[in-house]
Length: 309
Image (cartoon, rainbow, N blue to C red):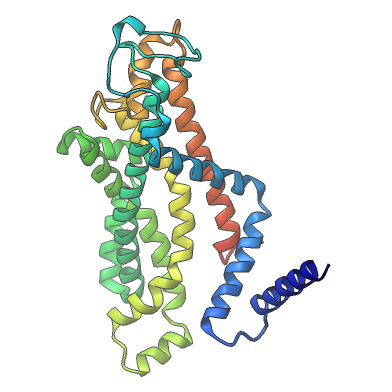
């Protein structure tokens, strides 16, 4: 009976350390904030559900060679247009390829697209937004008018224009989506910077001799990260849909790549008699997009300082 009591007291000590009103170090303060944020996030069951779906997507993409029962590129005209069965969980397509295997391998392309777009678009947006908000004046006017030009066009239409100029292909689709995705991040970073730049701690840093680059990169950008994480997570669904739209139009990943949008495009000709060709990849797009939206809502409640919660 002493062991559970000892474990319970140890747990309480850790909670007391994490929730201390006067942390002894920056690490303790950061650990306490993380603990409170995680506890708040776990209260949102839908957000946790979205996180589990995304975690499952990552695992499926990582272990795709072991999960997929068939080669996603090998055709077999003998088994073409087979319905759902124990041999083919999601049926086969018009050339006999296993749809389940193609969806499993397609998860890698989905993560590839959203990962690269986030890596490219987020830094561009935060740099433009913080520079614009910090300096103001003519620099702010020029950068924000460029941002407004990009925001004036629907994202998919603008992405179509860039892909048409660059040529079809998954790499060009990633570049096109990234070019059209940075303006909202720049707007958020600019708004945060305008709020922060006249703060007392920024004035104190200037008095210590810090230059604009050090202030922007070392003090303003870190304070914009939480808002950008929320926006990026919410934008993942839009990125997936844009990539699927380009694939649907034949401007994204090229055949025979197992890209979900391209799979729905080829399956639309058989939608009446062979519904699974378009339903299965379409459901995958819907589920993953919904998961990112649920996760984004949960993160907004935890990370957004302006949230009512």
